[in-house]
Image (cartoon, rainbow, N blue to C red; front, side):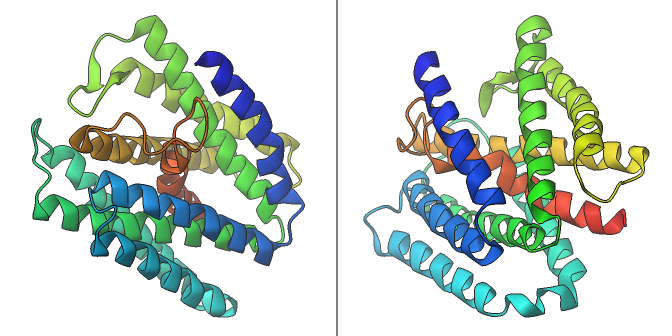
Length: 272
């Protein structure tokens, strides 16, 4: 399993970097939309909607939203703070599902409806934030900075959890996560952001603001991870999909990033 994970990561990393730095922004937006439509299909499985009319509706609705947003991308700047503020508020509402979850929750109508709304909201807001950042003059480097924050938080959490993890963070949702791991990830992310930003050709941010931005981004990325874990726990699935050997599905890889992107982008704007 570890060998598969490493080989898949070594293959995906150069492809991801090529997409971020080589593809023109409009093509990057389209490629990301196609990938996330695969995530919509995975959501339909986690919500037990696959093969049903509602599952098809989720994918078609998501495609229609992408098409509409892409067609009006030249007007995004007019209300960008409002759009990102609503996106972050939507994620905070979705995070309440983590506190309301109880073991043995049934796959009933309420769960399916909540999952359908979560699918559309999470993928739309994540795509929009990433797309807006990529469309900026230094967008490619900013997306790399975001990725490094999320990856460093995940790496820091892994090693801190293994070394010091005793108390579980969310035992009923993701037993492998610990409070020590969370602290380790939150400690690692700001330091990684400072180091990365120092070497990147981007407009400099005040160190304190950058560290705060990285801290918030890392924290919400954990929430995105837990939200997918909640769906997997209720649906009884180990992974969201099997597209990536050793890594699971699209949502297994992008769950943290989808949650982090709107907060990171809004934070960038607020930080000047």
